[in-house]
Structure formats: structure tokens, C-alpha cells
Amino acid sequence: MDRSTTNNRLALVLILAIAALSSAHASMSEPLHATAAHNEALVRKAFVDWSAGNGTVFALLSPQVVWTVHGSGSVSGTYQGVDAFLEGAAVPLTRRLARPLVPKVHAIWAVGDTVISRFEAESTTTGGHPYRNQYVWIFRMEGGVVVEAEAFLDLAAYDKVVAENPAR
Image (cartoon, rainbow, N blue to C red):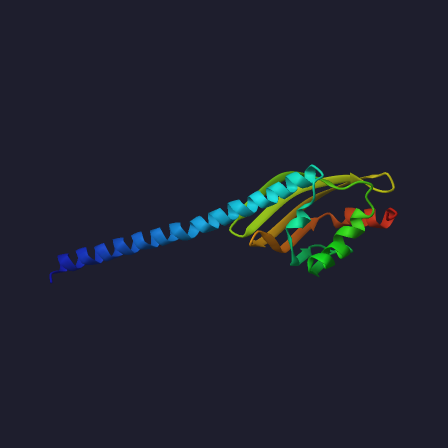
């Protein structure tokens, strides 16, 4: 076999390999895109419903969710399970609010099984003062539910509400 025939065969093998990889990549990225779109739609709907007073995003949480509140406030840490998170981090705040938090979403992004939401929420405390906070939540989802969550917020504002307002 001459050198020209060998080079042509090598080129053909490389072209076929590239085509196969491109096809495989396209078929693998499609489910990731579909998963991301589906998860984003679930989270977006939960925020719309929450804003309208029809539930909360917490309805998306797996009973075994692992929720981490980042920072150095009184509720920072990792909570194992939805009940531990709600009782340890959500309830201390919500019991000191005269009305439910109303979120205003700034953005929701999704990539694969991860959904990131940036929003603000406000309410009035039981002491009659305004409460406002900015949040970033990062959810990892499986099967349409949140299995891992990370929260970033102003924990000083959270702690102030808990410390200065009576629980209802």
C-alpha cells in the first residue's frame, strides 16, 4: 500500500471518528438540555405560585434533602432532611413574620440537574418592621425534586428579625 492510500484511509477513519463523537455528544447533550429545561420550569412555576400566595418552593424538596445555609449566622450549617431544614432555618424566621414572604425573582438559570435562582423577598415582622433580603439558592434536582440545596442570604438581617421580634 502506498503512502497516499494510507493517508487517505487514516483521514477517513478520523472523519468517521469525529462524526461519531459529534453524534454521541449531540445525543448526550439533548437529555441534559431537556432535564435543565424541565427542572427550570418546575422551579419557575413554584416561584410563581409562591409569589401568588399558592404554596412555596419548599414543596419541591425531597424529604431527604440536604440543605446548606452558607455564612456565619445562627442558622448557617447543613440540614439533613426537609423537616430539619424547615424547623431549624425556615420556621424561626417565618414565625416572626406577620405575613408570608413574597418573593420577586430576578433570574433563574438551569444547567443539567442544577437550577440557580436569584431573588429577593419581603414581608413585615411581627413587630411591624419591614423585612427584606436577597437570596441565591442553588438546587440539584433528581426526578423533579430537590435533593441538595445551597442558600446564600444576608444572615445578619435574618438574625435581627429572629432576635428582635416575638414569635407568633
